[in-house]
Length: 421
Image (tube, rainbow, N blue to C red):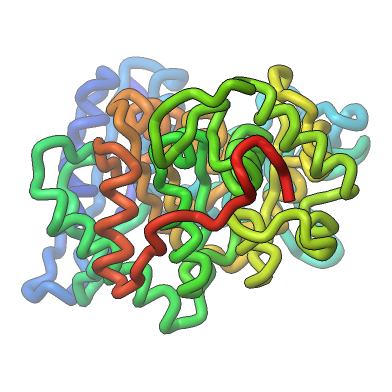
């Protein structure tokens, strides 16, 4: 029988962290004995527990301890060892059995010091600069031969997300996916959270798919931009092309948004829109030349919203602003999420998951989609903090604008049917 003692502290009772830890120990085939426990008497008090863990073999004990770290349970202070560092064997290659990060705040022990790892990002390694005593998350394509990389789980600790005291407005959803809860109340809470972030000069990130334009919700996103509730926008070629097609021709994939009938030119509007922007040189140049005079991306240019368009294999065109190198797109997105405190993901699966991989767990995240599987996928890929709202994006954004006291225009101004301005 292998044995170790772990300690855990914080809001471990009301955040349900302690029962999760005990349940995990049993589910992994080990046993526990609580050696000491101190429970806070008031809501603001922190609690503490010292737990003995027994597993059948040393290997199984290591596996249990590694999982317990995800909830902040660490070996007792007398058992803490420094992290093991090994040099990267080549550019773009980590050492064997390197530590793979989560999106939770993380510290690594170097010598007798705990160093916080910056920034928090899942599915990376930890690179340690021993001279500067700095530790950072590094994606695999950016590691260089000889970099000191953390190997194994020893000397690494994680801080789980606890319930905030006092209670935050965003803690309204008790389930990860809200399908039958009163949506009006939930949307009001989302609006209050967005107001709170902006009052403190935090940045709000929107991640959106082309379905947002198809459903006629583009004008509500424009109002969010105009109202100062969007500082960063992540999307693909599709959202931008549909938005620009709508602005130039009043259609989305050849269907008039205001009449719900297909134009005679059909899919050509889609390609003509791409051609207009390529002819102008970029979306910004199209705005500056007066070619593009309305829509989501016109508003992004006008109100200084940073946007990143990440490409995919099926893109038409693409638009000249689309970043077709996926690694470069990831790096740009990493830079743009600095200072983001709230993420609103709507009608997109791949871009939501890609963005969720980059966001720290401390960023409040709402995923809105008509398909509940999108939210489930997002959480399963590691963005466990995401709260889901299963609904069509158009009524969601319409009501969100109402809660934020933003009135949307009835229709987007556009050129005559079938002709770009």
